Length: 342
Length: 293
Image (cartoon, rainbow over all chains, first blue to last red; front, side, top):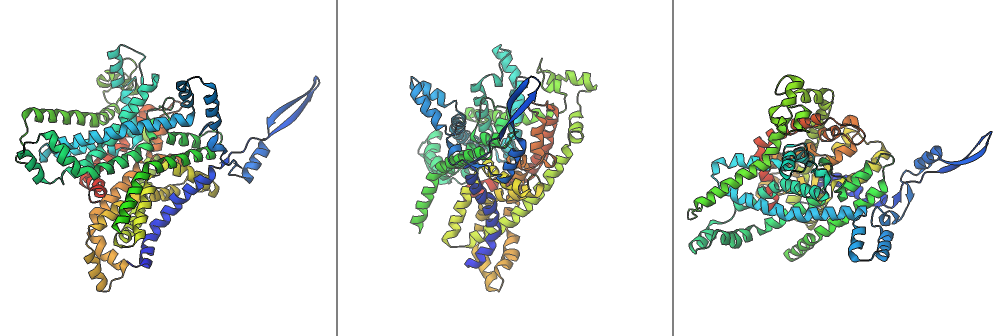
């Protein structure tokens, strides 16, 4: 296809992506260097028969004037990145000097909002991704073994958790697991502890959200693995059976190597999706004990008084850096393959 | 796939059946339970005293005189203005699907027919864009949209959703276009068609399965979106998912939980019916990128 024709065909979609994905990333970058204006205060002298008092009040008029003149806020450089709510450089230095043991230092650091969110996000990725791969593969193997006639409805049932939006999926589970729901109430009875509930323990909340993540993402892994299993060639499998290979050996030495590229694809996609975990935290109302990077951004953007554009933008940029680190190995590999192919 | 040689022992078969039943229960029961509970009153579905009330409908009998009640539905749809939210969802979904298919087919066709290096790099760029968390993009939109005073209205959200959806649509349609043989284009071009005529009259007619699949995914994205719609639309224009969240209530005001339950069912039902009919297309779409490479 000539360059000119390509250009006109690609222009609409390219324009849409540049305007609404490329530019916003740049806009986020710019915003992250600004912070909202401080409120301007003035001294007011109030006199009554008993004498004069000077009080400090917020000058609303001046404040809104400066906000209108410079809506982006004041220039803050890397100030937002290093403040307490983000990388917290000063606090970490202080903790390093003050705390006695390394454990205490880690404790202090993981209580800072950004690090807390980072640790939850990474823990979520670390537990959900491998389990999704494993469960998806087992379901694919076991559905592949049932009669073809009844597979349709079984597949329909299997992919339900995937097609609902995460907010709805987590709500549906939350209503069952909550202390007033069917599972929660029964667990309370079983454990003989009427105060046991999701909100009472941080560990329980984390486990629930991770289980939700596995429940929601496994169908995707299942669908891809199931399709890949259909392409496994018959002959090597039959040869292996004749040679006396056990079922497990066949899977390990023939099936898995064959679908290996697909496994990396699924791992990559679910890692990317898990890194942006956000809706389940709202669905499970788990803001108190589990916060993710995406949730921090959301929280800044729905702030009631002033929207914290700068703070949200700084977290966003750091999230994008995180995504870049995750994607880097794949991109480097693709580039190498591409260079060889040329 | 029948191996012929592969004899499965009875114990393996039983184990397999049990596993599938357990998994299906885990996957489907929450939805069945929510559907069942949406016809109860709050005191039953979220019972403080006994979870069995949700089945025996103890309070529902007292409050409404029947074992099942549709109060939650009628209230959410009228008082809760869920009709408005579903109207907005329908508008957003229709526009997002048609616009993103229009842009996506054009772009993906060009990508699949170009032999240049830049086509490869554009696909990689699309992959990187696909990886961006939506909330980071939203934090980039909010400020400019406030300044331009286009925040809160449906058209803005539609355009944003179309753009966010493009990378995936491009990849999907690209892999479908790749399966259409190039000879088809070449013969049309030799016969004197322009590239656009070839695209419109020769390629599109054989591309319907791919277009339907891509359309389904755009539909699911637009229909299911929470991040973009919750932050870019004002209260009046909220679509279904942010509306459900608003029923949950916050620390400041008590929500109406049964409205949320019934709206979850109302919002999920059309999606399930759609998947029932188009299951094959959805599965082929998910696997297109992975298997065909």
